[in-house]
Image 1: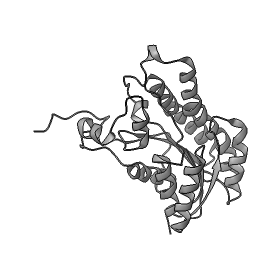
Image 2 (image 1 turned 135 degrees about the vertical axis):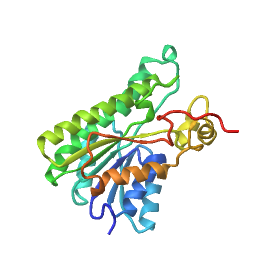
Image 3 (image 1 turned 45 degrees about the vertical axis):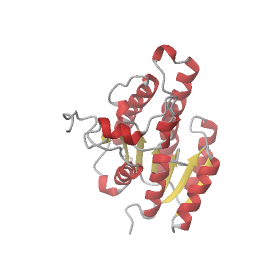
Amino acid sequence: MGQVEGKVAIVTGAASGIGAACAETLARAGARVVVSDIDDAGGAALVDRITRGGGKAIYHSHDVASEAGWPALIAAAEALGGLHIVVANAGITKSALVVDLSLEAWRREMAVNLDGVFLSVKHAIPAMRRNGGGSIVILSSVAGLRGSVGSSAYCASKGGVRLFAKAVAMECAWARDNIRVNTIHPGVIDTPIWRKLPTAIDPRMLGKAVVPMGRAGTTQDVANGVLFLSSDASSYMTGTEFVIDGGFNAGAIPPRR
């Protein structure tokens, strides 16, 4: 039996990177997965990989910042047998110094990274309550724990979801609804998002330079944490932060010879 056998999961921003790894990992562990993204080609390709590997998944095209589309996404999950897991992964970033950041760019980042998480949770909780509980895993970042030059909007949004998750975790605990809410804070992870920045960065080189463990993380490193928080193995964890960063947020070590 898989760790999440028989459960239904929604993973947002799942067409590539961390989201794709999370969707594939949950499917391998027995979950039926609703892959959500605006990248229709990437989402369809992921579902094909999962199903060819023996897993169960469907694709649902959806912009997480659009509330109008959320009821249909929840309904798609319930049609598979309920809703037990939500991985709120969808996110964007635009590297710019605050004095150069437009209000439009700021608002778009907040819409996806913060509003999208709010809508994920708002619409997921009633469905989870109908099924006796569940686990909500929100992808924050080490940028939600510390500042970073050129990432003011990203830090604000990821710091926002960190405390939002704690507040909702307390609401669910108070309601005794058996819904847990936790955040994951990846560090330098080798994903395509780094290469899409205005000044493209090689995460593998960055990992060697700044991460105490001497390497960038993989999307599977993060997906393993998501699987743990999604499963009953973490049944006594809520309102907490799962940092997956090779020691980056803990401190620094002297340069190696």
